[in-house]
Length: 555
Image (cartoon, rainbow, N blue to C red; front, side, top):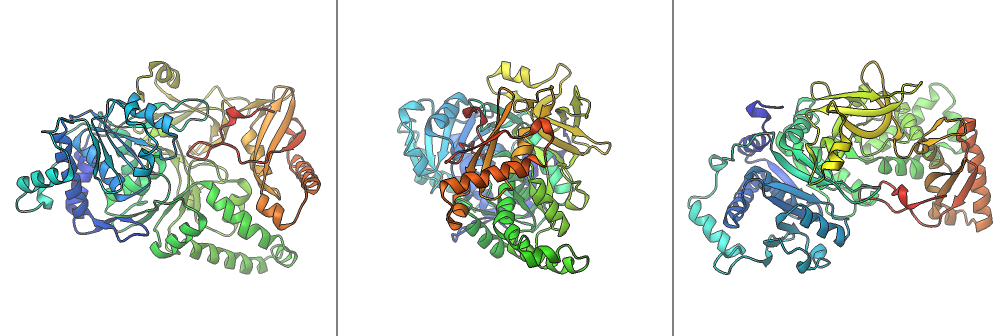
């Protein structure tokens, strides 16, 4: 347990607001809204007064659901520093799922984007005491008695009475609350069923924040473009929590992060580090780089020593500038980076690395900076914070990755069975991921326990690895490898933009996919050969963190 005063989650922000009072803290990108740490602290104080007026006590739950914006950030920090428990809900969740989470978590207040609230029937969330708009923080509905007004005007009058001389850094004094207490309940996006509420103690959040501080991923004046949803553990921990603990400046992207929007934001903000999912780099490689390096003159030059470095250097310079030019590294999380993409980026000495984590560890388990990153790994187990082991390894050393340490959850909210199933008898968290660990504690992930397939002679087949190869083939957007009896079937969603550009008809597309099958099989062992490719004309249904819901599909 992290017990030093400077390791206490609430004290981290009390100290940060005081120390960085006049620095810019958050910007709603694309608007004129920028708040300093002092302005944020005052808004948090106003919410603390609102919570008190609403009868909120330590340990009560407050839900927040909406796009990334400054009011989302303020709601989160106000809840945690008040001693209540924040319940972040992914804005992509359907209304029924959101209603279930609000009710299951026993949230008393809800802060929500107006458009999302329009799809929720107030009668289906009867235990909410009040609902507030994340657009402007106005009261939407109240179930308090009329004499207990919680509207903005009433709260402003009370605030002015409490701080007649204005709110200053000296007024930032938050409660004493142990890191052992819960800080948030994060409902997983889930690929095989209904969401589970991950009970995250303040200790787990503090562990991730301290890692960011000690490794200098975040520092005073750092700049982050927060385009990953803050309701998801990865973006929340580092683009938001760690950045603001350090005195950095977070630019919040509230729109769908298309490549066009992101590249414009990177050019303007010039971030110091970039957190991303593999999809963005893989799209850039497939759309911009792969066509360029596969052309005859360039592909020939790349085979000539020394001469190849000139071409590779220009590609690297173009990529660095596209991401703002001032970042130390791009950190990939959420899923492994495609091997071909990773190999090329390392060849051009592009500063990219891959980390590993999960919602249940808030999120980080392993990480290595780009200059110490080992190919196809996902970093080293966090020294001093986390431990990892491989359970029941096979002949190749592959088994389930199990972890324990500062970042681990307390369990699943109101779900004792799921909690018991997630931990071993000696207290290690079962990640559900298959992998191996080398002598220097680098983790290599092979796939999910639930998705691993068995070959005809009992060999382990990892469909994710095969899919990664298929996804690099021409005219492929995404794929899913399934098993029927002993045959492997690849469902392939075509890249219709590329298909249309080449004016391929259905018959020609089928021929191209059959050629892809042969090319992929040439790089696979006999027991993991694809027997058939089936064209699937729609993108696969995904969770909010863009994992394919595999359980919906069968061969």
